[in-house]
Length: 287
Image 1 (tube, rainbow, N blue to C red):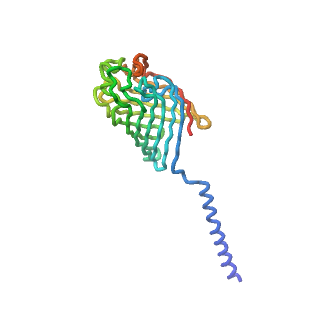
Image 2: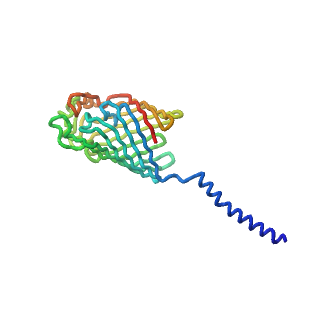
Image 3: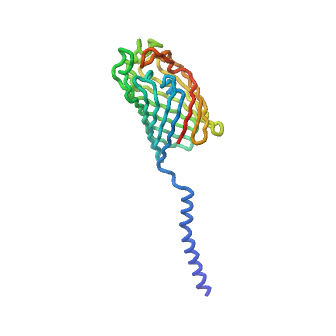
């Protein structure tokens, strides 16, 4: 009787264990679902001034900005962002549309990289819309710029090179002896393709919900004189509930004389210090 009972009991135990096993696996999978293949982070923000490498793109006025990315788990990404700009600085422009994409990955736990390119698009903009007579041959402002960045923990070193003309700047629309009222000798002497920048960015959490940000960079305009600019910023961001955030930043540069009292391309008489030191306030929300 024992010889029959124990094998039967063993078989019953194995069957019961086998029956339970799939339920244990399913429970584990339910607790740790696979990471999604795609993510779509988006944001919208209001800034008191739109500063790009030390230079105001909005003639010192506020900008409404929005953007969205498509991020793949492989590291590939595509993105689009939008901002208003001023035709006093960017001939005939009212909107900037940035189309970008690339690949992000990790070299070590603390060291990551980002290789990509961005196309700055200005719908309807053209240097022929400049109000200055004699410096308005047709020339678009769209600019294509590949870039590469290395990030170590909270520090990022980034550089990029313009493939075509730098925002349409040429010896026709921005020449020495007439292109810049603040410095008559400053201007473009030849093809500006190959213009490049290098910058170091820091983003460090200093307390719960608080992040300290800093930047220093240098923009070099190829075949030019008197208009290269060194720029930087420092400020803090405060994260708020529901994805909101506020920030305050101080921007500074070694503003070239050419950018002081820059005359409006829209009307030739109003002026602005394009690369002046300024404080920028931000309000944003991430989705």
